[in-house]
Image (cartoon, rainbow, N blue to C red; front, side):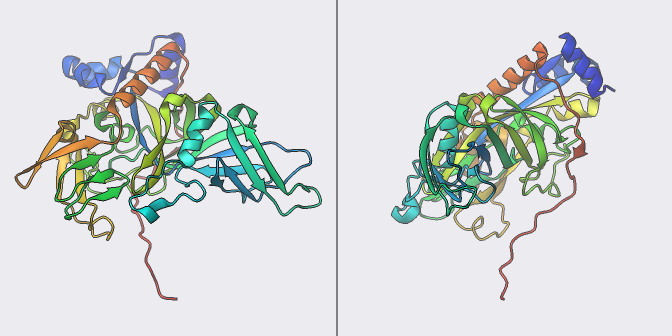
Length: 394
């Protein structure tokens, strides 16, 4: 048994033994679980992919004369201003003003909130346009100016739902192409798409949330952020395998971090044809090896992680709950899966190579003593379902 305090002392002294979630699999196989649990202090996990439920709070400071902003656009993307005078919230999936969306189906969705966030973190100029009804103490009624992230007092990423524990594999059983947040799906089961780092993914390496909880420090696009809550749609009560790994979405994390400390390599605006805009993020989470049970969970392999194949042409939009098949991430990453005698090409919307790079960067930060671990002050719920929205008569 180890404690967070003991592991942090080893990190401070430069003596911590750290492996990535990919490296630890072979190490445990080589030396055995008992010895590895004694040797290893931290396993780093990571993921990189589109995370729609993301956004940021921005504070612009006061103009002269002062203004209480009641409507605002950043590079023509609407931001929410119903907070305080010069605080705005920008959502990753908000479209640019007058984007035709799917009026010309399938829409291109070339620019939105995620792209503005990418520009800010890259240090580029963004246009702020704001309106107000004017008050005695805030008399200005209109403002138009250009800002960079360095001009802002605060730029805080606040993401209600990131790092889905597992997720659907999308397929199209209809006879026409469809466009989804998992990409374009060809008719008649012509392709399959997925989005997960599999054996590197944070919550798949801690399936029952023994170390990841509220207060856990995370690597958020290069900044040191933390988990501030269970993520929205956190739903751990679901089917799980013998290794406790869920085959459904299950757990999620709500994350926050300082955008001014982020690396633009790991923050990307995303355009999804026929669907909308999003934000791709790189996230790393360290798992302290407090005992051998926690270590064993980090040795999960792609071949041991099952995901549900869902028909996005009918079953998904109609919320029927049907499952076409279950497949492993090893099969998905092979590039081809066979269902009902048909070989179907697969492709991932997340980047395993980026996730591997993030796990390595986090490992290096820990070994240098630049990233200490934080013990959760509240654990994530392990029994909780998700309530659907029912349409009721008045």
